[in-house]
Length: 128
Image (cartoon, rainbow, N blue to C red; front, side):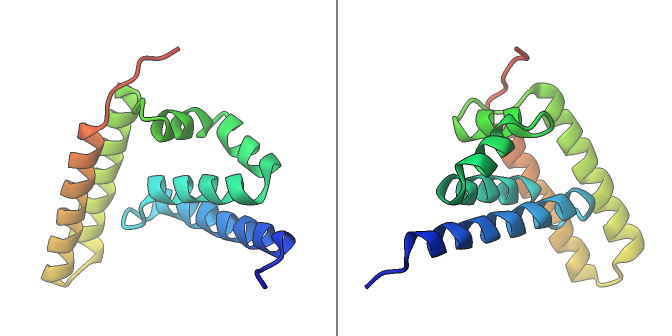
């Protein structure tokens, strides 16, 4: 006997809300990967609540971004630039002024490099 559909939907909504909240924190804390968390939240909402999924993909702040990314269209060049500037600014400030451990500093710069490669490899979409 499987888990009832209502329980599954509730668990997906709770997970989506958790991923969304952590994704918002990731906007401020550079080590948390905002994009994957927002995409996970959208996927959970898709399975748990049509209303919440619609809210996410129609959201004026990140809805178009989620749809472009999930449909493989990529992101706007301006979003790439802003993402990279903000990423490197926050990683650099964190690594140089908040972190004393050399290995953690190196790890932060390696993460920033990997994220930069990923962002630059995404296709660029033009504004509509």
